[in-house]
Image (tube, rainbow, N blue to C red; front, side, top):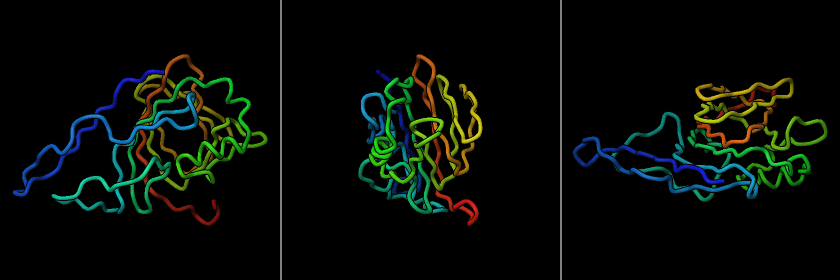
Amino acid sequence: MSVKPVRRIVTGHDAQGRSIFLADGAPERVQRIGGETGPMFHELWNTRETPALIDAESGEPSEEGIRLAPPPQGTRIRILDIPPDDPSLDELSPEEARAHFAEVGAAEASSHGEGSGHARMHRTETIDYGIVLEGELVLILDEGETLCRPGDVIIQRGTNHGWANRSSSNCRIAFILIDGSFAEDLR
């Protein structure tokens, strides 16, 4: 599946405090997860604290590889290109699903198993804002599902969920992830 490029524009400050462009181009970290039928992650930016320090000299905190969740006390913005579901997803074992999530440092997030609604069901201790940019995607929860189309905004509040692309076209969705903490009754 060929996807159109993502453009990332980063602003900052020069030594006199004037606004400048620090970067304008493709994100530095782009990676397909889960094999050739998996989603493409375009990592745009992360922060390591809230409130985030705004200074003249630092850029994005360095990070190795792709991580599903934001850093502790931090945030993450990414764009995902999710191709149409491949029939092989129906055969994915719970161990294989965990292995796919392990590629983004989150094997424990996988909740695929007996009776799960999708092979890529998962749960993270985050608040996620998802904005569908193009295509369509089905959001699957433990109880129900809904079709999300361009312009729809999803506020994902640490719930067990999965994304299914039941169409014949790519879905591009932007995610802003914020580190969170489960209430005791939801742990």
